Each structure stands twice: as C-alpha cells, then as structure tokens.
Image 1 (cartoon, rainbow over the protein chains, first blue to last red):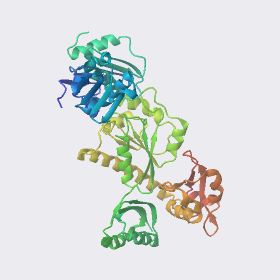
Image 2 (image 1 turned 135 degrees about the vertical axis):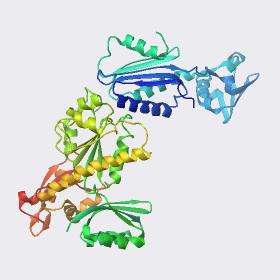
Image 3 (image 1 turned 180 degrees about the vertical axis):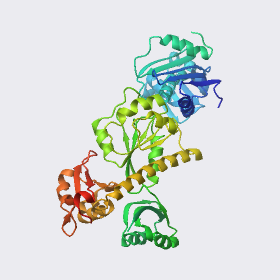
Image 4 (image 1 turned 45 degrees about the vertical axis):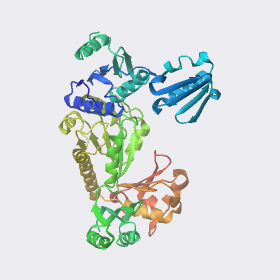
Length: 193
Length: 312
C-alpha cells in the first residue's frame, strides 16, 4: 500500500503526540484509508481542548458504470447481463429491482441476469451508474477520524469536498477563530483557502 | 500454616487427584477452569507442601507456579466502553491481570471520557469500592489526566494503580495526593499488544499491582482476619447448596478480606449469617453481610481479630 505523502501530528505534548501518531496510523490502516488519503495533518491541543484533522484525498476512481464490470446483450425484448466482477452485483441488483421491479429481473445463476424490457427501457443500460465510491468514502473517513480523536469531543464540524476534508472537534464550543486555525493547518499541507 | 497463592496447569487426566491432594493438605481451590484438554486451578496451598504437589504433578505433566494475585478481586476501570478504549488497551490489560490469577471486573464508566466533562456517579463509585484494588486506565495527555483524575478518584477508598500515557515520573508529579501505584507509557492505543516490549509493559502493570497487594497483605497480617476468606468460601459452598446452581464462573468470589456471594441478598443473607463455621461461631459473628451494588449479590466483609476476638 502506498504510504501517505505527508503525515504529521502536531501537539504541544510531545509524548502524547507520538501516541496519537501511532493511533492514527493504526486506525487508517484498519479502515483501508491509507491508499485514499494523500496528505494528513492532525493538530491536538489538550489544554484548549481541540482536535483538528485536515487532509487531501488522492484522485479517486470515478463512478462505476454497468459496462465497467459486465457485458450487456440486447436481443429484442430480452436483455442478458453477464457479470464479470461480482463486487458490484449487489448494488446493481438493488438498482434493477427498484427500476423494473423484482418480477422482471431474473437471476438464473450468480453471473447472469435476465430481463424482459421495452426497447426504450433497455436503451442506455450500459451507462447505468452502479456505485459512486466517493459517497461511502466520506462516511468512512469521518468515522475513522472520530475514532482517532480523543473520546468525548462531542462538538464537531466536518467538511468533505473538492479533494480535501477536515474535522474539528472539542468538548467545548468551537473557537471563534476556527477558520483561521483551519487556514493555518491547511497551509501546512500546501493548500491555501 | 502459611497459605500461598499458586496456579496449577496440567492435563485433564487425573486432575481430580491434584484437587484432592490440595484439599487434603489444607489448601483451597479458588477457581477451576477446564479449557479443552487443559485444567487451570487457582488455589491457596500450604507453603511447605509445594514441593510435594510439584512431585505428584510431575508424572501428570502438571506445573505449579506462584501467582500472587490469586484470591484478589480487581476492578479495571476504563473511561468508556467505546471503540476508543476497547478492546485495546482495556481488555488487553484486564486479560493479562486475569491470567496472573486475579479475578478482574471491568468497570466501564458511563461518562468517564473527556477532560472537563468526565464524571463518576455514585453507583460506579460504590461498585469500585467493593474491590481490593482499582486499576485506572487513562489516556495519553498529561493535561487531561491531571484535570480529570481528581474527579474520578472522588470517594474511592481502595488502593489505586494509575496507568497512563505520560512517563511514570510525570504521572507521579501531577497526581496529588499520591496514589498507591503508577505505570507510565501505557495509555490509549488501538493495536493489539503482541510485541515483546508491550508484554514487558504489561508485566510492569502486574509488578506494580503485586507490590500494592503485598503491602495490603502485610497490613492484614498485623491484625489478621477472624477467618480466612478461602475457608469461609468452603463453608458456604458446603452449607448453602443453592450456590451450586449459580452458573457464574465464580459463584463465590474470594477477595483479600471478604467474599462476594452471587446469591440474592434478600433471600439468602439471613441464612448465610446463621451458617455455623465451627463450635457455635456463626458467620454473622465475625463478618458483616452487605448488599452489593453489583446486581443483587451479597458482599461479606470479614472483621479483624482485634474487633471480634475470635479466630477460626
């Protein structure tokens, strides 16, 4: 797995910071997030107390469409889908059931789906969007950061988008100059807000 | 006769002979585990008879090792039962103490986390105070430990061993008034303890607990208990047959100066009070029976010789 290009834990307490570096490392590895994150900077000040994590995401693989993992064969009303990669079978079936109804979607074996569709229904079927990996990534990433942060920091603000993310947490109300803090931490990973 | 705490490990074949031997020599079996083909006994045995037991156990490939924590009940206090603390480090430490013979109970605080917001409620305080010793597992930051520990120790009158991320010296410096034991460099972590240096750290926790427990034992020896808790356990097991129906692994848990009997207080306390130990001496004469805050168990606190003037 590729290591992160930048990974720092900044903390006024040196020993505590080292422990948190190890914790962050283990949690990201456990959640398979190391290959997704490009840069990560964590700042913890137990005196305030505040926890800030800012980072950049690597370029993600785009939306997975039906043609990426299956062959579609349309013969009149009869549509046959041959699955190449089973990973996306479950979300595909869910979408097909929702769109056409369970009684019209048949699955004689693990790798084949048979459907009886009108020509206008089967048009553009190959471009059907099956899964957007970035949607579940957001949840995974924020969950992992919540596991890393010291427990009891219930007041949180989080953001994800445009290839970057942040999470700020504290047990008190968040400081008023939060934007300045975020700007400063993002600057450390080479991003100007 | 001085009884010493030991652990016996051996095969299941003819293990009853060892149990009979220990009982015939005047020792007590505190706990017996059968794990697949292996038997682990935690027992108190007469010091001078250890070579004899070792000789008899040899053909059965049994081993007897001293384990100073047998006969103690220890509370391992974790700040919450969230993924931040479980299973590592809390379970790792609790399990390691358990392997060294102690009966450990993990106390997960409802609101122990955080710095300013951490709290200890009365039920948690009372449950902790029912143990022989409390091991506090705190986090990695000095500032937080200094701030919150004062709240978490309020009302705790049993010895405390404090584990935390900062070094032992740093912990000593920030805790005032001092506690009985400190182990540094073992705070919050998220990985399993499997490296040799991590095991050394766990051994350090055991050594610190043993040191504190030994000091307590010395204190008890100065003014001994009216009856040994292990003997009282045997008496209850013999005379209150209902205890055999309790499915808990230790229906009667031995503590250093008392017992936890896992029977309902309302139904059984009067009966247990009246149980005769020997020649007209009843349990009620030499011990206080209290309702435990752990479920509806009975907590027996044995009174000292100076208080009762009875020794059985």
